[in-house]
Image 1 (cartoon, helix red, strand yellow):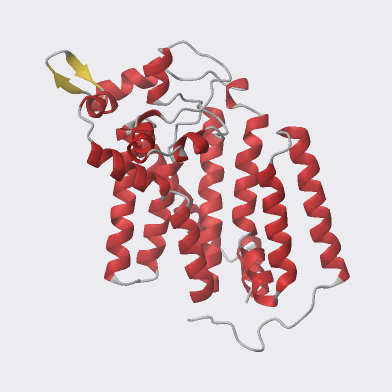
Image 2 (image 1 turned 60 degrees about the vertical axis):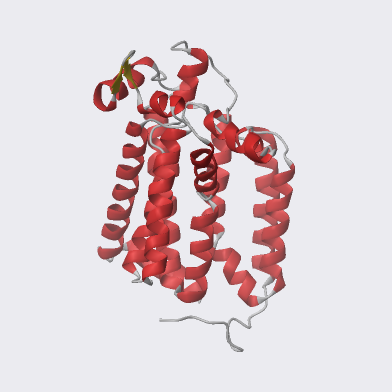
Length: 316
């Protein structure tokens, strides 16, 4: 079913009650953010953009209402800074590194290397650039795909967005149950745990250096938690997109494109020392579990399914 903007779509004006709710949520978010993670300019940008879209037109109001699912994800991710996972469980560093080598180790003349160490020794400009391009797509591609679904099929948009949120929630739970250091941490700090270690661009620095920019340096300076490498949600996101592309029987070009993006991000995660192969596999499992769990919840036709149906109706 194709959904397009029509002359009769959502002519109702914003009620005073809804305006007050939006204002309360905006102020509450800014105050809570200040208390938990401190003031940041992007918080004002988020609030300003959300309010502008909500009050601009009926279609933008429905758009931002639907995309509030992604806003919830972003807020939760940002607030993880206030509650580091290493407060709650021991960070896995040496045991994870040794397991990676035991399962996926590559033998050379000097002994056994992890896949990260192997690619560190065999890096080249082409792979540096391609890995950077793939890694830059990990959020834009899901958001762009969600935007396409919003205008193409609102029900599938909601299903995709809620699956995306559910997969993230599952990943966040694992982050706190199993804090894990990324491969670059071992390269820089060995097996010693150092709290409040800042984020690092690792192998992606070569992409910045190739183009003379600081895009990845800026991105990783804002990371919520260095010790949240397992599972790799970078690896989970494109798989969700690919699943919904296949589910909605999009054209061959789209399927091939999303397949390349998915595999490319999986490779880049290991090549750039941001994740072990084990982290990538855990991300794939996390995405698969989230997709299966969401489909099960919808199929049950219970309270969750009815609530989802009401949300779909609200943005149509």
